[in-house]
Image (cartoon, rainbow, N blue to C red; front, side, top):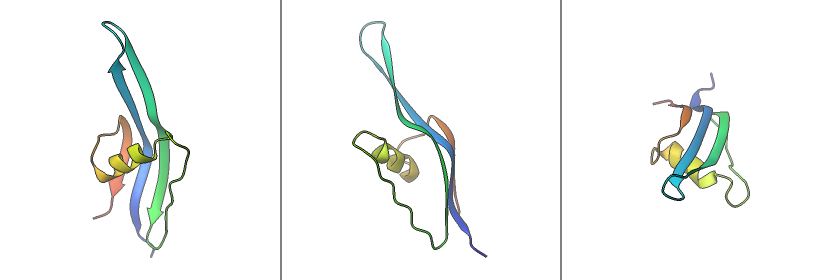
Length: 75
């Protein structure tokens, strides 16, 4: 039976920062994303500059917390 190694469900990341005394800006770095990686599969993440590839990798590595969604890793 093929085992699921990684499952990502509606993972997203939004950064909020100040642009002045009372103004806040939000940037949706990674829009909701879902995929499953099974044993024997290869996954390539491609995209333009600024499309969220590095942010996604940091969330998968546990370096930053996602804003929403689930990240399920098989131990």
